[in-house]
Length: 571
Image 1: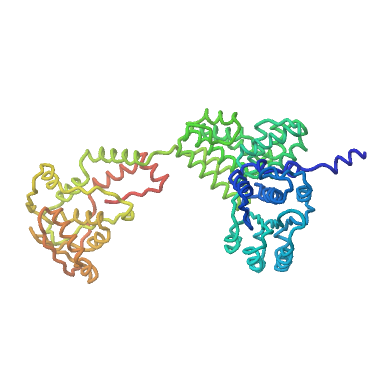
Image 2: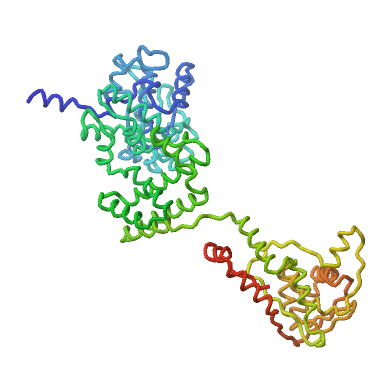
């Protein structure tokens, strides 16, 4: 009974028992330990340091090693020997010259005033008085201000070491007086290596998969990894099995994620709903499952994009498995699946029916259509449109429709109103094509011969449509006007009110319309604008409506309208 009680009292958790005692033992922070060792060796020590970083990455440990190294009676190079009286006192927390202060519970101005009084007295043993203030960002504004003067010009035997997980809360006036060191998160491989070392010293058998589970769960914190290791050893004993870890920590088995992607690939909704039932029955956290699924999809994407599994932080067994299934999905499909999973995880936070959200999200992933490259899709649609129109260019079709109108009707009685496009100007990209007569002249590398057509008014609709394509504002203005009179070298445009009249008479607009009219009519045209209310609507030919209807019924166009919300443009 007495022996058991003695063993219970002497037990020390792994995080304390295996706390690094020299700089070389600190894992994953070589950029900091090397700098501190060089500063000690060359006697270029600063009076104030600030260590920032996530929890459990070695900030306080580095501060303690530094305080021992600068006070050690028999230093081993830049490291403390950890055997002299000074090192033992600091390690055991009974040194009267190294003070560890909790910034959360000693955050007021009175505590800082007491500290300012205490720094006046030099050390009786050792070289420095060291003040280690943990979570220094918790100090009040007044406490920081009271510390400024002492921090800037302390006695030569005083050193301040601040540690914080929230560096952005520390005032710039404090940061500017300190040497700042940023501790990085510890990688999975470094955590695995350290836990394997500790397990070997403790005579505990543990496989690589279990080590990787611990490392991923620790999320970059060595202290968290050591705490999880203690918990697992208490549950499993000296022989740690992966299945036991998964059961104890409630971690979703990776086999389930592979089954999810198999269901998506097979379009098997029944299998997907069965997986949801299994996840609920096993008591898995749904959000943790979705986060694991996102990571699983990311592993597949990384494996096939990089053609390697080196960037996947898992055991070699799973790396080989991801390497074998690469190419099962298109890259765009994987990105869409990741987005659906992320949206589902966000939706579950605010719902009282998480199972329903999970089922809907998984069904959406299973029913997702394969991605289609938009450029190839547009090219296919253009080919379809060309086949429908018999290979005739769009500009030629418009000209033919214009010339096919009833020529017996006087041109001064009507106007053609082009329907405005439903897209913004920067969303529509059109290739400007000159009229047929100008193209033929250009192709022959000869100067075009401008010959006015017999009936110039028939090209007015083309002029309005081209203005809508090139300059929407001007086209919309012309859309509200009417062509009152058309002669060989003169166009008379009727405006409904003074606003339209003034806009069309602006210098830039008028120059553009004259240039556009010359391109459309093939000759320089004189433009006259007057106020007139005479207008007439003309519907597009039936053949155009039939072509548009036929094009909209094509499966590719239907896919665009369903997936991307595309809408037809009436022209």
